[in-house]
Image 1 (cartoon, rainbow, N blue to C red):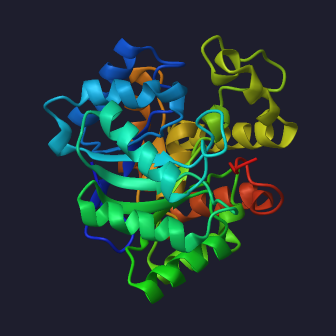
Image 2: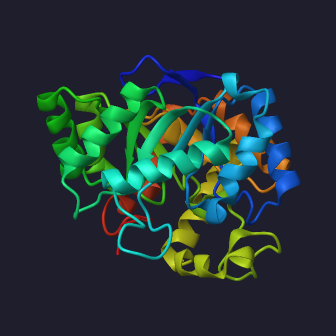
Length: 324
């Protein structure tokens, strides 16, 4: 496994991280634990979850799986999206974040979170309130580093400016949808992160499986694919995305690589990338994706991938989660 620093912090994370959105939902408890064990055995030390994944079941499973192993893991979770009913059941207020941190600590069976991330920008809470709350969490020892997710470039830059002015802990990373099928962060967010030393953690690096080549225009989706277990995902299966997936497959086959490995290797070579989180519902998926860490794509192939995906720098992001 290869490791990189998370932004300009001193924390080192595995180049390939484990995303756990499917744990407790598309992957049952036993399978999820097996995937975590396999990830740790193969050098993955970054595990990412959130308080809303599988209605909190993902955090619970991780907490059980890491008994006796917590010290070897960089554990990341998130809060801020809607958790339930009521006026304070979402957002980045001090009230909500303190409540959700305590709940996450209990479910994860730990007394600290390595990377606590705000799941999306909250337009109804002053950034000063959010950042001072996160600063207090770090000072208390319950949080070690803080990160953002689904922030626009101006929102993240404003947060960094406030932290600098107030002397608060600053965001060391940001999670965004980024892949060959979504290059919109390259317009503003990535140049800003390079300038400010913020590490980028792409989610949906395979566009939900589209870049694995498993979906074809003329064929029914595979039995265990995301679209079968989560029918709402079908909204992403438009002609442009599917065509890109087939082009990536073709390029990979010419050189003996799987389309997933090619897509992940391309992403790992982009500026400011700290770790790329990939989900898995089977050990075989993670086993295949681990190969991307050791692939070095030739400049000619990188250029070709840039060319076939250039249109995806514009338009709407593949995914961008915001508060209602």
